[in-house]
Length: 172
Image (cartoon, rainbow, N blue to C red):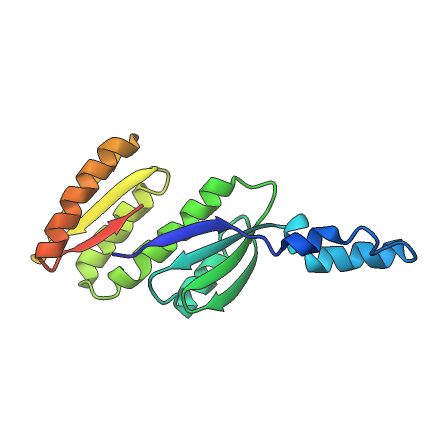
């Protein structure tokens, strides 16, 4: 199962905060150096870690999400993403998660099933908790919830089915 971990980005180290005398003679230079040294002062930066390779097509799709201000690929499993301050941070992160959770699994489905799943994904875009279980025979089972507790219980059930079969599971 694909996993995503979001962490607030910080380039600061304890010793970096002790630069009080940096700009005594050249205050503008110190300000510029500080902004280059600590980009999180100017950008709302997040690290996204995954347990799967992030594909080039995923990166291209993420770049077009409203609110993504900057995007740096740090490794096949990690991205640094800047989210615009005037955008809903949780919605932007959810849109990114949506793209990453749906991209690879959809590549091995039949065209008919893929189209059906894409329609479901689109309808779930504003739903906080959702799961799609694609059975080996092509039938699709979905679950949505507004409550995290209810969702986690159903997700555990879906994960057990997935572990015992060749089902595909997509989740929010």
